[in-house]
Amino acid sequence: MTIPLVDLKAQYHSIQDEIDAAIRRVIDNTAFIMGREVAAFEEAFADYCGVRHAVGVSSGTGALFLTLLGYGIGPGDEVITTPFTFFATGEAISQVGARPVFVDIDPVTYNIDPARIEAAITPHTRAIMPVHLYGQPAAMEEINEIARRHDLLVIEDAAQAHGSLYRGRRAGSLGHAACFSFYPSKNLGCYGDGGAVVTDDDELADRVRRLRDHGRINKYEHGELGYGHRLDGMQAAILSAKLPHLDEWNEGRRDRAARYARLLADMPVVTPEHLPDTTPVYHCYVVRVPDRDRVLQALKEAGIGAGVHYPIPLHLQPAYRFLELEEGSFPVAERMAREVISLPMYAELSDEQQDEVVAAIQAALEQTAVA
Ligand SMILES: *Cc1c(COP(=O)(O)O)cnc(C)c1O
Image (cartoon, rainbow, N blue to C red; front, side):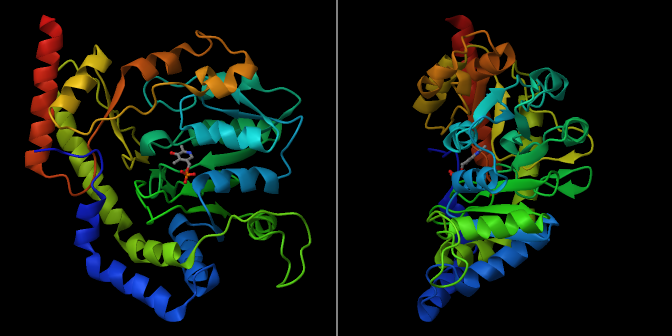
């Protein structure tokens, strides 16, 4: 039996009638771009996150880009972030013309290490962009305190953290603004590309609303040069159908995570820590194993959809050669990039499937121990 890393079909089958009805409604109303479906989803998602505004955009990358632009961050500015993330986090900073300044990560949470942030602040620093990696909230209290002291913006990259909680508050409400992706495999995913900027900042919300739609101030008037970064009605309708299920799906992921931890407890496998005061949402279930690449290969051969998030930290990406950051610059991130492995994770993952994944890991570890 093959077991995928994520199973989007299983999720669809569990709410097929609701999704089909949402798609039908969009076709019946021919509201394909923006319109009432987008407005309705924006209201529901802002409510869910506990903030005043959600602005639907074309992707998570678009959300990051428009938020940075919306705050006027650009050439000459620096934004502090983690090197251990999906490429788009750094890319958005670079695309507005600013410079990403990487800070090494905490080896327990895999998130930016707050103790190292202040040393990276310069007179050019405008913002800190923590990523809630794998759905585990970053150390927001410490980060916000540093930002207050140095008068910096805090922009959450919440693309992996829909619904996670930090000290009782949702990801998305923990900084000045937050960026979500609705890429299909995210905890809340649409059936194409989509994203959102969420914020309590009225001015930023207005600015992003204009920027996403060609700088429009009304149907025919363009107040500034903007972008084509709108959210589709179809995607918004699908997201509205899925949002009421998000908490239950995240609960299912936490249940699966707890079961993995029990099953893996006696093996030489480092399982994720569930920190007190946070409710993670396990976008990825990431463990560390000795001889990662051989374990990965063995799992692939056993039909298990394992992955690596991420094998190359941003500072070592070919595209970032111009930053001239050598190997050894961020030792914790570099080590994790060599050791992490993502196991199949979704609410519908059955006990039998999970047992099979664990048995395959055990076999792989025994094989690599012998070899
Ligand atoms: C997925 C993701 C993004 C980008 O989202 P897209 O919708 O694919 O553009 C950005 N940051 C992180 C951490 C992500 O996981």
